[in-house]
Image (cartoon, rainbow, N blue to C red; front, side, top):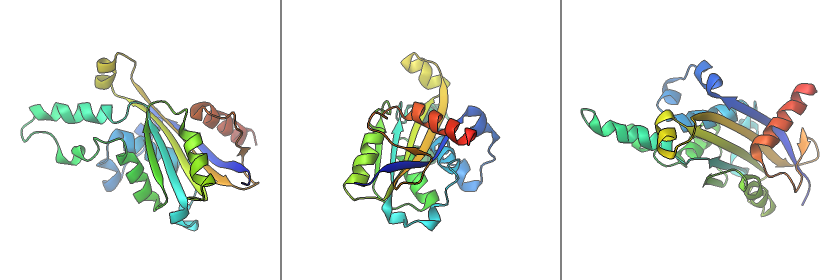
Length: 195
């Protein structure tokens, strides 16, 4: 297989999320999906110039949809009960679907729950098997205040994304030792800023 290169990388956080004025469709999605969408949009790639059926999506959500689940659960005390709109987002894979719809990507997709240590390996494997020519990789870490209380940790709102493809021209050539998605995104973003 040819070399795999990262052509774009991004990092977003709570401040970035607050700065975005969501449109009608964007405002109805849950916070995890908004965060993942923002990270992908920050890549600055026009995916419409690529065959959408040859671009995969691999996403990892550190706590799954726990923050959305707790928000949905709080709705049981409201008149009318929990939000049926929010119910659709009580699966972490909903963020993958939102990215696919927004970017018109129809390639293979995968959603993992937990740390992102297997994310890049899965993306590489998807490309190596010939299922995709490139892969959008997203690591989302969302822990709302309510979810943080449940799992006894600190709230967190961060995401990073990168676009991995076969080629020789890119910002960074992926190495076998690259496993930590967050550190890799930080490294590639720093390289891009220095250039």
